[in-house]
Amino acid sequence: MHLSESVLNDLPTLIKRPAYDRSSLKPGIVHIGLGNFQRAHQAWYLQQLFNLGLDHDWAVVGAGVRPYDAKQREKFLKQDCLSTLIELAPSGRSAEIVGSMVDYVPVEDGNTTLIRRMADKATRIVTLTVTEGGYYINPSTGEFDASHPDIRYDIAHIESPRTAFGAIVAALKVRRLQGSGPFTCQSCDNLQGNGKVMHRTIISLASNIDPDLAEWIDTNCAFPCSMVDCIVPATGPDELALVREFGIDDAVPVTHENFRQWVIEDNFCAGRPDWSQVGVTFSDRVQDYETMKIRMLNAGHQIVAIPGEILSIETVSDCISDTLMETFFRKVQSDEIMPHIKPVPDITPENYLELLVQRFSNPALEDTTRRVCFDGSSRHAGFILPIIRNGLSSGTSVEGLALVEALWARMCEGIREDGSIIEPNDPFWNELQYTARLARHEPRVWLEQSRVYGDLADAEDFARKFEYWLTEIWSNGCESALKTYTSV
Image 1: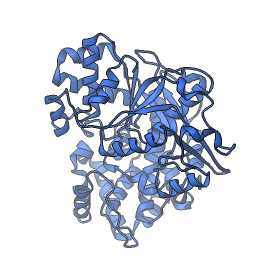
Image 2: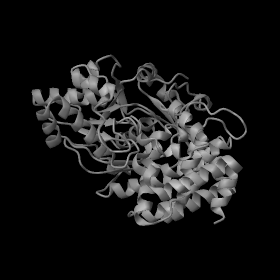
Image 3: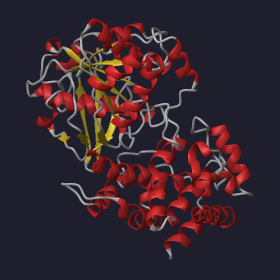
Image 4: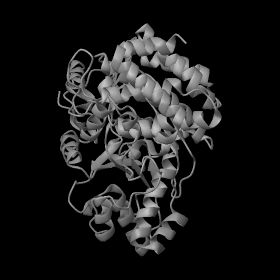
């Protein structure tokens, strides 16, 4: 049954669907970068709110600035902006049709329609997911990269920008001139202090265009930090086949685990949905929540997925079910990550570790090591290297994290231990692969990638440990290195 508004009442009774009149919804949020997060998280929480009869003026309008987004738009519009969420629990599967998105603006050169939509006074929040490396921030310095070609273009052509950030600045420029007020800019990416990162990018870009506009944005707009916690595999042929098992023909389904958490700083300048009614946590301790999540879950994903990729293990659940890899995961967490984690009101680091082992072990999820290893140059800089820096400054161990970095260098060489090829999996794959092959014989060359490691190449204790582990991996293999580390 092709998914559309007209067939909602004909779907099997076990499939949840909107319990509200979608024609009564009015848009209040523009979301740029409509990947799986929006459907599995933001759209779902809004649907629960709409199901209670609340906040029907906060529906979502989708948007994007890449060719991929144009294809997504076509798929969504063909099914009235509906999509299917499939929850994958160890005990079974369930499906829900989500209808909280009501439109998707055209994806076009110059982003005219997107700017117009964001400039509309009805838009009170602009949310964003553009991946961890998409904010034009130098990962080694934390500074805005005004030299990037796309940013240079936007500075010179702000009326027809290329980037999402250029479009946001252009829309705010219009709102300032029209007197229609600011909107909240909310990052939903897995970044430490994501609201602060978004603020830095927007203000830095605006300052290069019009310092008075930058000051107006800084004074009037809000940039709340948020923490998103839900494992959402990429949608591929298996997911498209799975949704058909429910009797639905859906071009944009999403699978997700049976766990979901959203923690948001209550800092909005033009109102917000009452998400607290449906389980969202509003807190002034977002940083503590996100530190626990980013360092234990996101860094933890790298700890298990990278050796899994080298050893041709396809899923995270298969990795964590391996006794050696679970032991490795637990030891790095306990000895090197958890000493830097504060407990939050509802969970301790020790309890979160057990929860992670349980979540990673979910065989129904089939989350691939390839997906988790994607864009390592951003994920290592954002998730792992800050822990190494903390460890070096506080005197705690970084032995296992040095091993993780050595494993990543081994993975980027591009050939698994069974001789199969690792397909390009990073925006800088060619550069990483070239350096990884040099590092096989000169390990410290890997750390000289300043865009990723910054000054860590000069941290002799860490560099020496990295050199030892990469040499061990190439000499005796991945499993031998894991056994050596875990036996200490």
